[in-house]
Length: 310
Image (cartoon, rainbow, N blue to C red; front, side, top):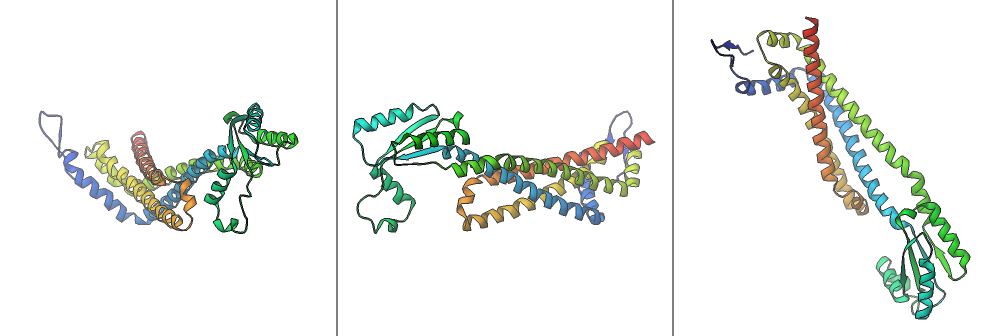
């Protein structure tokens, strides 16, 4: 314990807080060593909570990416029996554009359909077919304000009753499925993230409080010797910061390894969670900041309680 000497005629203490920074840091590490039976379970819990929190937030990122792709599903493709003359095509296009829910109409010729098929599927699938078996079609993209399952079903039924087209296709099953899952896919990850943040704050705060109670006599001696609140609080806050930083950092590294492995086996998943590195970095920063705040609140509450009690 450093001894403070008051300098006559000066309102200052020697050594200063900055001069004792090394002592404060070593005290924090000493607390880790002496109270490892309390800190180790807390550290493991922080790691697991940070792991779940990071996975939850990255999953939420992927869900929002899927929701962006969902808008492209609100389209209807109508196929013609045979190629039409230019005037007839224009007449059909105008009829389709007059549907209020339709935002854009695109004509796809037989050649364009064949090129698109070859780009998506193997060329062997057309090896036994002579010529171009794919018919021309119109692709209708719904306006953004009409991107609802109800409007998609309504347009599909309308075009099927029209009789002008050979076939009408729309991904109604996928749209209905996403619409039924949307609330749960967004609501539960958000709730889990909030719950985990609250749990992390409690765990870190309790860990610091246990460390404080075990060193109550030391804290009281520091107060009576004239130690400033910063001087007393710093080691305990640093303990909490180290717990949050190491726990969340290891969780982020573990998830980065898992995502790297997934990228090699299922590349399509990574497209929906691209940028997850920044998310993991923000999680580490957030958990570390939460650790610092929870530790500070715990120490300040302890000191305030002691002053009130005395």
